[in-house]
Image (cartoon, rainbow, N blue to C red; front, side, top):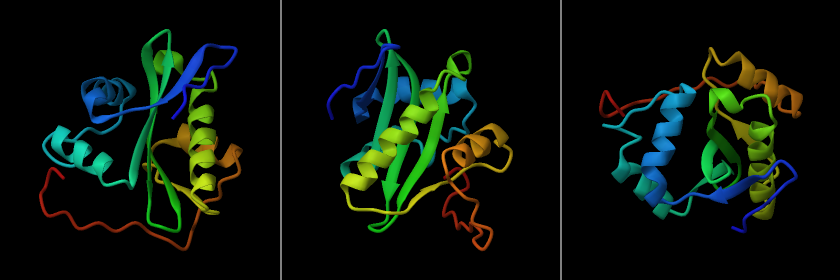
Length: 151
């Protein structure tokens, strides 16, 4: 992915497994749940990235990671996950830029449906996605079966 620059000097770049420590530090500072012994272990993130179905984008300002988003797909829908921006960098359009870049990526893959998984109490995230044209799917509920408690 090419580095994209804008007037505010935020660049959007693709992250790799080598960016794991910086990525997870941002997740923690941004208040995202972090499961280092389960789904968020370095080994799991590396495996996910190598699968070809996961892409992680980072927003940088002056060389510092200030926002991230994890993109996945099931072959027909694009999923926006783990959107996070450092608290001191919020309300500057960074999350919107990450979402728009996510949508460009999914469009390039030929997808016409973009979805976001948002935790129940993240009202600010819900408002942002609604502002960008996303609609709540009231007919769908999320179910999970975890093989390990910390996964």
